[in-house]
Image (cartoon, rainbow, N blue to C red; front, side):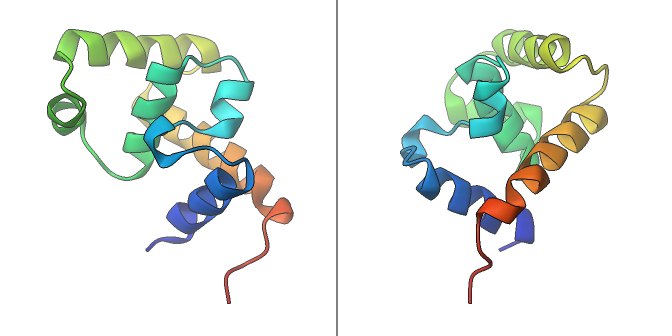
Length: 101
C-alpha cells in the first residue's frame, strides 16, 4: 500500500466517511462535486479512465464530464496537474494524521 493510499484511508476514517462514498474530503470541501471527487480518487489509485468507467458503470462521456468539472473547479488543464493538486491537498492533511506503526 502506498503512502498516499494509507494517508487517504486515514483521512477517510478520521472524517468518518464510508468507503462507499469514495470522495476526497479536501476535494469536496473545496467545491468539487462527489462524482468528480470519486474520479480523482480513482486517478490517485492509478485507475485509468476507461477502467473507471467500467467499474463505476457509467459512460465515458460521463467520465469526461466529471473530469472537465474537476479541471474547472481546480483551475487545472491536465490530468497530471489535477493529480498533483489532489496529492498536495492530501499532503496538507498529513500533520493531522499520525503515521501507522
